[in-house]
Length: 197
Image 1 (cartoon, rainbow, N blue to C red):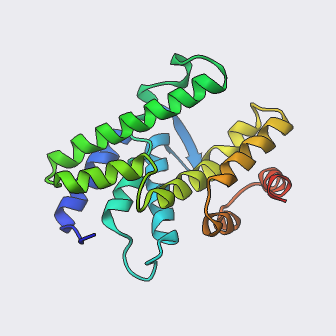
Image 2 (tube, rainbow, N blue to C red):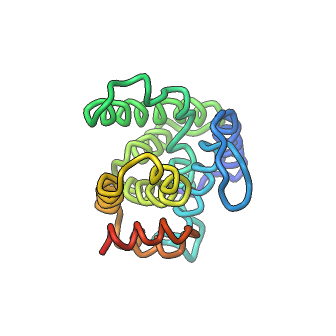
């Protein structure tokens, strides 16, 4: 993929971050309380850069944009608006990804990206094609850092272990190895060790 102009890239990042900074859900991560979707986008882009096969060079701009937009305006379609249970959750998750892909397409078109570039970003947001696994890895690592502790208070231990194992199955070996670099509390570290043993 070609390297995009820095002005296009900066404009796209600003548009995604502006949209995500409106998230009413605030989260404490790395010592600061900030909007959840904004934090998810920033951290996912960090993980993409760290895990990129071309880590010695800059990560591809399109993958970085897909990672940054992987939870674009997520709060606008709450989980509570779907049926309870696994089927409702899976439908909500599918619909969310479709929305994220559609919304990032509109933002990228507005700042001058081509139709082909937009399609590539949308495919990665949907976890498809080249870069899709990298975005999935980043999303999983962000979940572990920003939401595992909260989920641990909502689920019994067996269910939580199952959630962690299902998350791990979606991750590449490089991403699983990177879990050790996430700053976690002792109880979260013990949960991960038990689930991934």
